[in-house]
Length: 74
Ligand code: HEM
Image 1: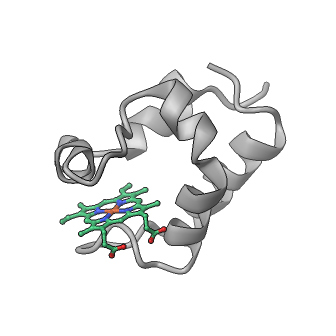
Image 2: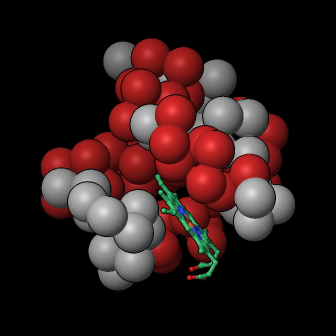
């Protein structure tokens, strides 16, 4: 089964991530924005620059990449 934003990716994003990043013009709760900036988001996650406090583990980073590679399903 292909990964889904609502089921697999959105739950990895905390409300505090959404709130912090909205101030920087990126709405991580929005599928269309996450699709549009997916490459940049992936780079920030993979380089462990974001989130600023607790970086994602490698499994979740790989999951985001797989979601991208599969075509970023809703
Ligand atoms: C899943 C969580 C998060 C993701 C995917 C994310 C993603 C990004 C992206 C793509 C940028 C644009 C610049 C870049 O590519 O580095 C950015 C910038 C920024 N983010 Fe986040 N962010 C997350 C969480 C947070 C949190 C929790 C905070 C605050 C505590 C934060 C604070 C900032 C700030 C201050 C900038 C602008 C300055 C900079 O580039 O370092 N982010 N973030």
